[in-house]
Image 1 (cartoon, rainbow, N blue to C red):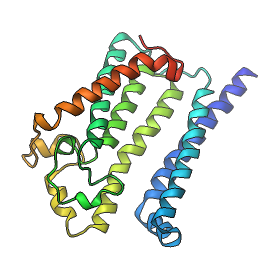
Image 2 (image 1 turned 30 degrees about the horizontal axis):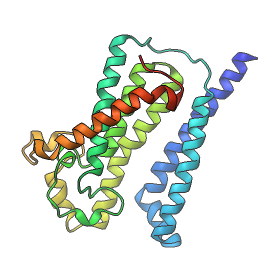
Image 3 (image 1 turned 45 degrees about the vertical axis):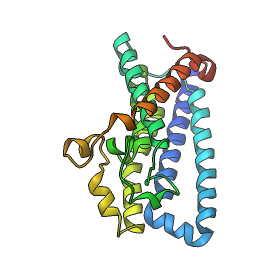
Image 4 (image 1 turned 60 degrees about the vertical axis):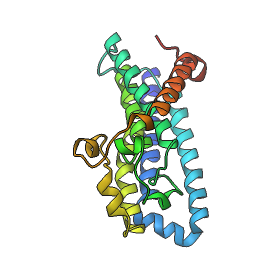
Length: 232
């Protein structure tokens, strides 16, 4: 009976994760997105997208919270935990950086495509999406069980594939200015800097770095209260 229930609960997590991934990437894909905007208007589309996102995210979180003990692909060690701390710390820095500078790839900020890339935008034109990828990989590293790999891996996949969908959408909507912006930035982190197309200035990044680390420290201390799982 326990094995049977475990299989059902894990299958529900797989279904919830697939629903979250497909709905996010499907609704935001260019043809489907434009069709919804034509029918609902931009505000209606954003409202519908937000409702679907909240429902599917909630379903996924509840399914993960009810997860059974699942097989481990690797047993977490102190090295895995420290890797997670580094990756998640960097993810908070990128996430704060995404909201502390002009971010033309964010909803409603497409009009800033002509602005010079600053701060985290020099690292990647999708700082928040890559922050989620780092966060997801970090949590996969320190867990190692199948249920956690499905749960956190879904967030990573949605964010990683989402960067390309965002690029395609903005390129289609802002075809006159997008090539200029794309030439000065990169999707993959640090590629624009490595190829000389962007210059990272510490004066633009020191505050997001401090704030990101402060948020990370707060989450680290409160992780047990937030999730019920204390950190080592």
